[in-house]
Length: 173
Ligand code: SF4
Ligand code: SF4
Image (cartoon, rainbow, N blue to C red):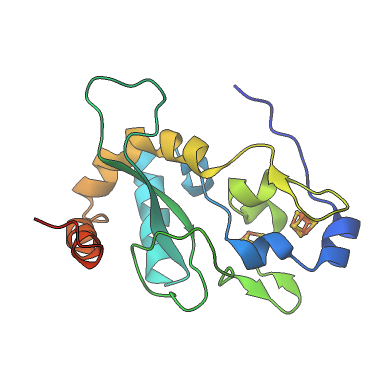
């Protein structure tokens, strides 16, 4: 397993004011919600969605490199909502300020933050890149849990969202 480094920098991040949080919320991995225990994961994901401050984002296509058989159409993962989209269960985004960002910084304790936030490597230019926990990496980790999420009804409505998006893009049938 990849070694997870502790990357937060109080000094640099305070000076920066959370440029990363204003760009896009970090992605969460299943462990952030109690995996590998699926019961705990479902309970925690349900509670997070009910709070309206979290949503499903997704990787379009199968995120597993080189996968030829039993490919999936898209891989959902959890992340905090983007301001202006709070309460939307499905929201794909490449830009937007995290709903959990307050004037005093992140409203979560460091250990409760998504892996995509914990994995950012602070640098003086503030153009920080993830050392671990990027979208594709977490999307792969969620694949074994998609069936449980579906069974629990937590992905209900996803197809409707995708059909609407394709229609909006003029790609619907
Ligand atoms: S990780 Fe980088 S962009 Fe994010 S708050 Fe710290 S210094 Fe700023
Ligand atoms: S969860 Fe916290 S650290 Fe992560 S993007 Fe949101 S405000 Fe920033």
